[in-house]
Every structure is written in structure tokens, then in C-alpha cells.
Amino acid sequence: MIIRTRHLVLSALLASPLLLALDLRRDALTFHPEAGSSVDKELNLTGAMYIDDLLVSLDGEEMPAEMLGEVLDTALEIEMSQEVTDQYVKSADGKALVLLRTFNDMAMSMTAGGESQEPEVSELIGSTVKFTWNEEEEEYDITYEEGSGDDEDLEGLDVDMDFTYLLPDDEVKEGDSWEVVGMDAFRMFAPGGTVSAPTEALDEDLGIGDLADEILLPQLEDALEEFTVECTYKGEDDDGGSQIVFEYEGEISLDFSELVMAALEEQELGLEFDADITMTLDIEVEGKGSLTWDAKAGRASAFEMALDVMILLDAAADIEAAGEAHTAEGTLELSGELEYEMSVD
Picture 1: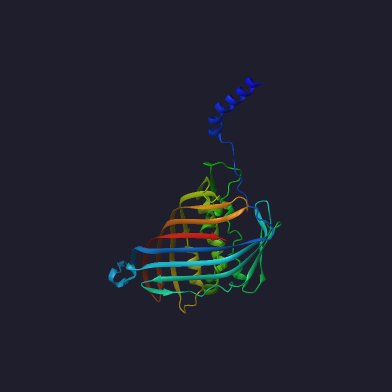
Picture 2: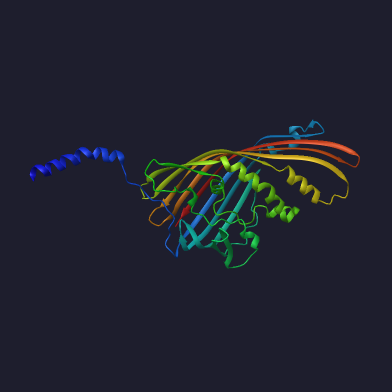
């Protein structure tokens, strides 16, 4: 018996390095918050955009830089914050089936050339919105649970402020990587969505909101087919949170030409004209960040992301009106940095 015990101990000692190397332990990072639990979330976005280049020409004559004033030396600084309370009423299969979100506070400020502006905040402040999963339609029904407001303010909202789309499909061990592609990846840039439909302003001002959805959304979906976020599991941090780090680099191109022509046709200018207008928008983004996941509570506990962005807008127009023909061309190049941070209490 003594000999056998020594043999077992010796075998275990010899096998330990191999077992450590294999490290078969794997972690499950899943969305499973306790029914009825609630958390407070504070999301902050800060950024600055700079004009790198601006060229404008009319009838072949380039506008001198001095005519553009101080616009070339002006940075646009943006600060946005949002405080909400999420109550996880019911969840299953890795998603919320019923979620209540109370909008406690929202703020936004923009500064350019030393002058600050604070746009009107959303009417959603103080309201509670209910997200209910519609199995038949495979989408969420979004309604007011408390408070009231414009239903269009609900159209741009996203139930997911836990970034569950960044989670792996299976259990993972430290060092494992996976990819998130397409519209799911794009959701990172608007956590919780927007407080109004993205094309609402176009609908109110120009009456082409539906057309914008019809023209731009398919383009966006096509452009995002190759947009990929590379995620890697880094294991637990010092506070016991499970760390997912991610990075990405991609390009998005959109053609606004048809939309601009439609908007022009909607205007009552009081004269006959013939126009051919083209407008394209190219966006390049590169960024990285981390998601801290509370594996026990089954929800996010922190998120941060920093990215560099470059925007190139090209436009050209040939217009004939009142017996005269004119041409115009313009190029605007912007670059900047954005930072996101979300804390959970």
C-alpha cells in the first residue's frame, strides 16, 4: 500500500506540469441576470473632430482659404452622457425577454471656436420604457411603461446595454479569440441605441425619412458585411471580473446622391431647374476596448472603447436654372478621436 501511494504521488507530480499546460478549465460568459434585479448604468461619450482639408470650387474657381474664415482652425468637441436604470424582468436563451429601462438623465454639449451649445435634451428623461421580445416577429416591442412621449423617440432604441453581442458563443479559456461581424459589431457605436429614429430629422425637415431608410440601410448592411471586431478572452481581473478585449479596423462607404436629389425635388423653389448632384461619404475607423463581464450576475459590469475616425465627404453638382448653368464641387475631410465609458452600479 505504501509503495502504491508513493507511485500515485509521483505520478501526480510528474503530470502536474502537463495538466497546467493544458489548462482544461473553461469559463461560461452568458447573459443570465436574476429576474427582477436592476442596475444603474452611466454611459459617457467624449470626442473631438478636426477639419483636415476643405476644398470648395464654383464654376471651376477654387474658393480661397481666407474666405472660409476660421473654420479650418476650429475643433468640434462633443460630450454626451446618459444615466439609466435597467430592470431585468425576464431573460432566457441569452437575451432579455422583458426589460424595463428608466431614463434618469441625459446631457449633451458641443463646443466649437470657444462657443458652447447644449441641444435640447430628450423628452424620455423620467420615463420608463418597456422592451418585450416578440417571438413571432423576432424583434422587440417597445412601449412606454411609465411616462409618455412621441413613439418615434422609441424607434431608435436598442434593448442591449450589456454588449451581449460581444460574448463568445461557447465556453472559453484564457487566450481564446472569436469574431463579431456586421450589424452586431456596429451596435457598439450606439450603446442602447439613439433616443429617436436616426432618420427622424430628415422626415421632419424634408419629408424623406422613409426614403432614407430605404436607400441608406441596405448600403450600410452591405458595407458592414466585412466589418469585423476581433475579441479575445483575457481571464479574470483583480476584482474578479471576466475581461474581454477587442479591436477593429474597417471602412464604410455610403452614397447619398439619390437621397440628395429626392430632397431637392421635395423643395418648392418656385423655378424650373435641372440638376445632377452626387454625394458620397467614406468613413474609416480603428479602435480597441474592453468589456468587463460579471460572470456570476450574468451581465456587464463595465465597458470602455477608444477609436480614431476619418470622414471624407465628396460632393459635385451640375445645375441649370433661369437660363444659366453652374457647377460646384466640394471635399471635406475630418478626423478625430472618440472615447466611450460605461460604469455599472
